[in-house]
Length: 288
Ligand code: F6P
Ligand code: MN
Image (cartoon, rainbow, N blue to C red; front, side):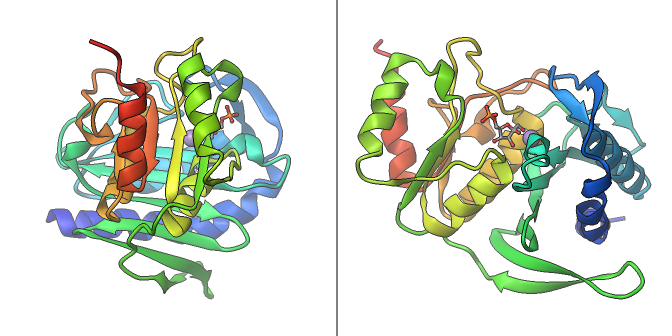
C-alpha cells in the first residue's frame, strides 16, 4: 500500500473510534493502580483506549511499527510506516470533566527518530465537540467528527487551512518547579497576553492555534526535560503548529530537530506564533 493510503487508513480508524472513546470515558474513571512507562498513574480509560487503538492501528497493512505512551516497547508489525500514539492525553482531566484527547504521529522512519520524519500528524479533542486537527501535505484543517448510524463518522470541515493568528493567549505547565529565569519571563508576558491553562496538551494547543500566542511545558528544576514525551506528544503537535505557520522550540532549536534516542524521552516544549517562540529562545539562551 502506498504511504498516502496508509495515512488515510490511520486517520479513518482513529476518527471512527473517536465517538466510541468519548462515550466510553464515563465508565472508566478509576485509577488502575499501575503506572505507564513515564511513571504516570494509569486510569482505566488510558488502558482501554490504548488497547482499542493498538488493535485498530496494528491491523492496518502498511503500518510497520506502533509505539504508544502506555506501552514499554515498540510493537513490530512488519514493513511500513511508524505510528506513535498518546491514546488519552490529559486523562487526569476526566474526573473534573475537562478536555482530553488522542495524539497521533505518522513517521516514515524506524523509531525512535526525529520529528522531521513525520509525514502527517493529528490530534482528536474530546470536548463539547469531538474534533480532528490534521496536518498533512502542508495544510492544517480542523474537522468536527460527527457520528452517523452504524459506527460510521462524517468529518465536517470546521476551519480550513489554519494559519496561527497574531498572539493573544499564553499558558505554561509545571509552575511549582520553574527556574527563576523562566518565572521572570512568565511575569513579563503575563502583562501583555491572556493566561489560558486547561491541563490537557491537546486543549491548550488547540486554543493557541485558534487565538495565537505561546504554549509550553518548560524544563523544571526537578525535571530538566520537562514533562512532555518527544515522540508521542511534542513532535506531532510541533509539526501541526509549524505547518500552520507557527514555530516550535525546546528553547534552542525546533522540536522537530531534537534527536530521539529513546521512545519515552521527554523534551522541554514551546510552540506558537513565530515571534513569541523567537522571544522565548532569546530569553532562555544560556550565556556562552
Ligand atoms: O500528557 C501530559 C499531560 O496530561 C498534558 O496533557 C498536560 O498538558 C499536562 O500533562 C498537565 O500537567 P500538569 O498537571 O503538570 O499541569
Ligand atoms: Mn499526554
